[in-house]
Length: 94
Image 1 (cartoon, one colour):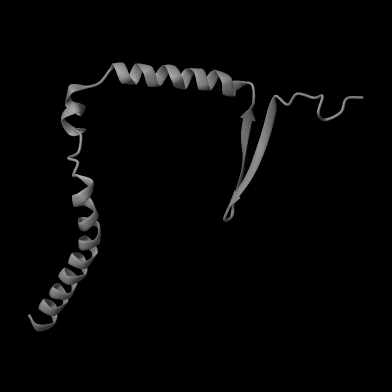
Image 2 (cartoon, rainbow, N blue to C red):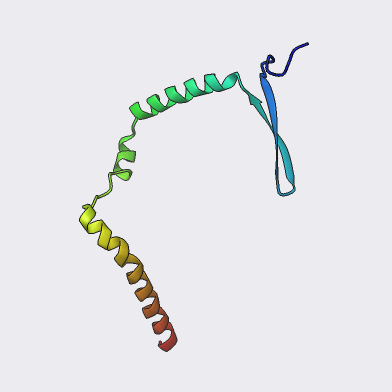
């Protein structure tokens, strides 16, 4: 007789319920190692094959110094609230 700790589970089913929908997900514990290796190779290949058109779209963003970001962080909500009040006043009296 084997205990539960001695058994190696190779295939598990996970049941889930979202609202009225119920389902099962099959989980193969032995396949996770192969998937991890495959994902690692895919990331390396994606890094090597960069498209020049995507480099035009995904440019680095401008970075501001920390001394300037702190005042902008506090001024932006005040500016947005003021602009909202001005727009509401314009709609009311326009």
